[in-house]
Structure formats: C-alpha cells, structure tokens
Image 1 (cartoon, rainbow, N blue to C red):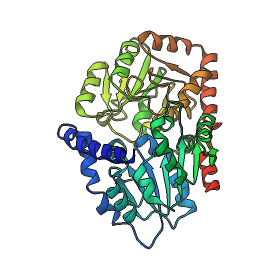
Image 2: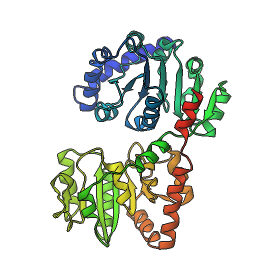
Image 3: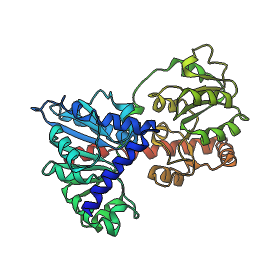
Image 4: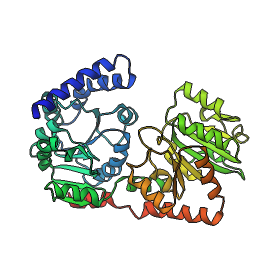
Length: 401
C-alpha cells in the first residue's frame, strides 16, 4: 500500500501539471510550489521554528488564533505557515505574524525530506484533518499535534485499506479534537492521547468581534429605518434566491460575494436594482442605494455586526463558509442545503438560530418567522451565546503542549 500511495501521489502531481494548462487555480499552486524552497531559505537556521500547516483558508482561520497566542507565549520561535490550496495561500501569503508563508509541495518522499530539512521545525501543528504520510515519516522525533480535528464514521482512516496508514498516527504526540465522536473514533482505532478541546475558530471569531474597526461608507449605508441583510461569501445560486426574494422586500442588502472578478460584480449590479459597488461608493452616494456590493476582500467578517439578518454562501456547492463569524454578533443565519458536514451549522439549526434554504419559499418563510420581534430577539441571543459557550480551545491546547 505504501508503494501504491507514492505512485498515486506522483500520478496526482502529473495530472495537476496537465490541468494547470487550462486551470488558473492549479497553475497558481504549481507556480507557488516552485518558490517554496527559496522561501524556506529565509528562515534563520539558528532559531526555532513552529510550523502550522493549513490546507486552505478555512483551516487557516482555525489556526490563526493559535498562531497568535503561540507567538506571544513563545516569541523566540519563527512562525512557518504552509498551505496546499491557492484559496488559502494567495489571500494570506503576506500574513504579518508569519516569518515565512509557503505552498506545501506534493507528498513525495523526496519533496517531504527536502522540505523538512530546510524548514527544520521544532514543533508542528496540522489543522483539522491533515494527514501527509511522507511528511509525517520525515518529522521523526519532532513534536507533532493535530488541532481542531474532526472525524466522521465514513472517514477514509477507518476503511480497511487504510490500516497501514493509521499506524502513522502514532507519530502524533496529541490529538486536539472538536467533539466526542472524534475522540471515540480515535479511541476505537487505538489512540488515547486525545483531548476534546473544541474548535479554535470560536476563539478566533470571538477575538475578532472585540476588535473595533470603522467603516464610514457602511455606516452611512446602514443609516436607515429598513432592516439590513448581509450576505457573506455568496455564490450565484445564493445570489439568485436573494434577488428573487429581497428585491420584493423592504430590506437593504450588503452582499460580499465569494468571487469578486469584474464579470461577477457586473452581473450582481444587473441582478440587484439600485445597487452600487463598494469601490465606487462614498458616504453620500451610498445613502439612497438599496444594495451595496463589496468588491474587495478582508472586511466581511467585520460587516456582520451591521446586520439584522445574515445569509452565508457556499451551501449550494462544496459547503457553507464560516457561519461563526456572523453568529458571534448575535445574528440569526440562513445557508444552503450543503451544511451537514459543519457541526456549528447543525447546532445552530437545532437551537432554531439558523435555517437551511433550498429555494425561494424557504427564505420567505424564514424572513416571515423573524418578523416576530420576540422570536427574533430570542434567536439572536441563542446564536451569540452558542459561540461564547464554545470559546477556550486555544487555551486548552497551549496548556497541554
């Protein structure tokens, strides 16, 4: 199986080279990987290194609070952050608390050995469910931790064909997991070095909610008697439903799409009457607009505090984006049907503070329900309290290591 795995990695790398000819995202990844080793040379060989590996942006947000607290507690360590996906690297490549941010090369024996030799990590954190066979083998006696891990009964690690791979888990010093189910799964396959710490994203969004940032244009837009609806990380299917419903309702909409290329922004300007792009807005011309389209990145998580209601995008595709960023501001949320892999979404639905949306009528029902001020206030409270009751994972991890 080890031989098949290594053959599979080489085959995957070859296929990526082909796909890169017509896929910009894959092309970015391969181009970035070619720069990895030169970037690693900037690390000081005489200083310790803490390596945090995140597959993509979502995993980085889980690691971010841990990175920041680790840096405060252990200032003599250099921080190395690696990504596999361009959606993480391209947005966070200039992260100011990291001494080095790189793409993680493919998990071949040669590349793993070269990466570990050059990075010379003294402690390593893999985030959520990152398991890289050759990298794990090369780390040998380096302290290795899995943080914010979540597993389900159908995870590949539990399959019969993964028995050889599961043995590599003995290289992890400790597993910090999100829930009891994950702990039970690890116990079942023979690993007891497990702590239920929860999800570090709760710590991150709570800290972010305490930060004070001014957005004069947004504040001017929101000076109205109408309710404010914020749609975060939306995709076309989300946006079509929002247009069908909200264009007939007395709401002002702030929409921050996941895709901000000009073609998509132009489409949104056509889809929503009386709309304006954030880059074209000022404190005066935005007042009379019904829809404000955020055509930049980096501010969405701070905009939810302006909302009365929130819709989180991605649920009509691979999965919803970060619900907690809205919930921390005591906001009831809606999202598309593909949310079942996200524990926080399931929890918020069970509390009544979130509603899955499949079509127009679902959103209409949700809006009508929340017109009852008593129901609305109750669900806002449940949403915010849910986040605050789950804060503390970062402290648990740092105390244990």
